[in-house]
Length: 195
Image 1 (cartoon, rainbow, N blue to C red):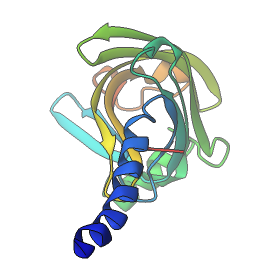
Image 2 (cartoon, helix red, strand yellow):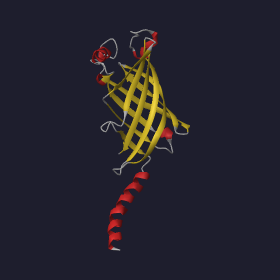
Image 3 (tube, rainbow, N blue to C red):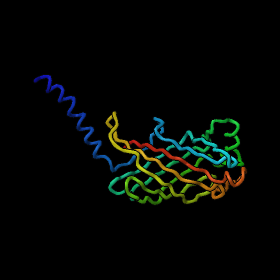
Image 4 (spheres, helix red, strand yellow):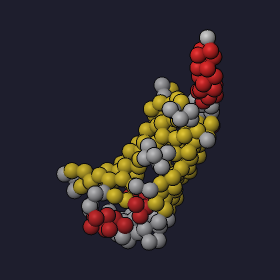
């Protein structure tokens, strides 16, 4: 009997913490870049023959999420454009240069949502303003929830995926490789920790 009481003293606080986490679904979240549980990937057609793929290694952000009221959700992300990484040092130097991102002048890109629309079945769209290369334009992200729930450290997490296509000329970035390479597809994976 003493053993059961001892165990219950350890288990009850643990269960209480998990229960509190389950109730914390409507919350503010910090994107978990420290644990590398989020990524911003891109792909660009290369001459119409293949794909140039890469990612931005450094970014940070936050979002609010309420599954009962998706329209009240928000997201804000800031990207260090100098962290572009296509797994080719010379190409990355070129992409950072004034032919493309011009990161000496425009070292950050930023997205701030303005509207979220629930499409049902875990799908939604996020409309917001993207500032890239010194130009701010509205974009639409098609997104879906991957999952949410408590983590092993008594926290609460929510994860999403999203995709959008950018026209480079909309952001003042010239078509150096021709029309076949004028669009960039962004694949986004975001996991946030409830704050």
